[in-house]
Amino acid sequence: MTDIQHFSLKIAGAVKSSENQIDVSSPFDDQLIATVATADGDDVNQALETAHALFANRDGWLSVERRLIILERAMEIMTDQAEELATGSAYEGGKPLLDSRVEMARCIDSIRICADALRNDACKPVPMGLNPASQHRFTIMNKEPIGVVVAVSAFNHPLNLIAHQVGPAIAAGCPVIVKPAENTPLSCFRLVEIFHKAGLPEEWCQVILPENHQFSEALVTDPRVAFFSFIGSARVGWYLRSKLAPGARCALEHGGVAPVIMAADANLDAAISALAKGGFYHAGQVCVSVQRIYADESIARDVADKLAVAANKMVVGDPLSEQTEVGPLIRASEVERVATWVQQAVDAGAELLSGGQTLPNNCYAPTVLFNPPVDSKVSISEVFGPVVCVY
View 1 (cartoon, one colour):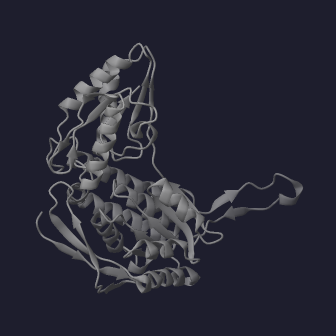
View 2 (tube, rainbow, N blue to C red; view 1 turned 90 degrees about the vertical axis):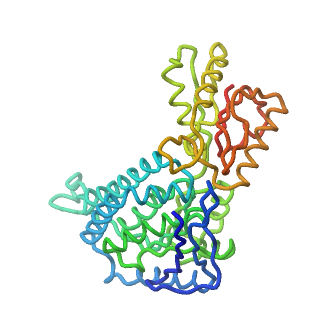
View 3 (cartoon, rainbow, N blue to C red; view 1 turned 60 degrees about the vertical axis):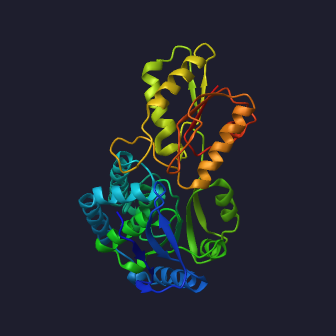
């Protein structure tokens, strides 16, 4: 995978040149994969104006039938290209190939759910005859597009998250502008290209990477935006929500620590493998990663020891290897941050049972901490790394 691609700006259905671009590199070997053109303020405005004009022209709205055809055809193309998409995503984002294949299957399922919802929710009848005024009446309810959708996505599921955000917009008949994560934009470009090949006019789904945060904020907070879909940190999400234009709606998906509570009679042998998978999947870079386990004091030590044994057996390394269970973190600065947090917890009294080591290629050993202080970073913040704490 050494061919370096260039992804140009694709706004309003046209390819545009740009003086600025970002490099996209593999988090495992730091090899340059592609370059992506970035958008300035004029580009952002053109994307918004294009989407707004599409929505304003009711005669040009995509029919339910056409949207269904697009979604169903997109599923067919995704199925045909599933292995290629999963491999590209694994290399770009560092998720092990086996897990990327599962994500690709979920991506297709997400589009199927959108198609099913569109098919089953069109022109529903409204109950009549429930009072004298509605006798001998027949009414149907038809849902209409809300308007321009802006979707800001995250790096950790570059296939399925885009499906979660773009699929519903297509199903609802809304023009959508997608801002993928800077670390994993290539999977987004490839999926959107599939939607275009499936029959979606290019201007109905535009992909844009603004040059800076100022242009990104301008994209999100513009009064032409009717719906804002955000996946990322709570700090950024709530800030952007506070800046939305009056009347704009939003959906915010933030982080979490997915705590597990274990009773004294828990079946440890059955639980440990699930806890290891839940805690170290994608190197813990998941909003539902198991970060904290609260176990009954009679079994807490046993849980921690067994989980540490499982962690030590996990294969860490190249995400393109079929044997790899835990890949790299998304960038070197994240490895440094996780290592610092773990060391701070150990210095404050946590017992390190496994891991705690920085490995080559931006990897970090699956780590189990026993009884870290309740005020330590690993106890009060989302680690977003391969660290599980047992209390």
